[in-house]
Length: 128
Image (cartoon, rainbow, N blue to C red):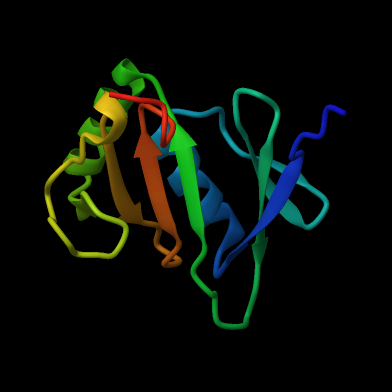
């Protein structure tokens, strides 16, 4: 059985701004509209479908596996924009630091909607 996650909906106060923030920061293609959504497509076809809501946004966690080079590029964009980041899942524990779990690098930061975003270069439990 080859089950893959195809898409998930991301609640946002402003779907266009939320999708553009993530796509720009991660170096992804420009988000595209699809029905009521603003869609950010990842390399393997998974899409994050941003939907505007007038209700409170309940923070979710989204983790992105990236290459070492992509990590450096994303970190540069984070620091250039003055976005706070930290090394542990619960902010602001070890603010301004990067973790080195499993022999890779990782960090956490928040989206404008308060979602907890993570970039990491090695999957958890992969060694190191």
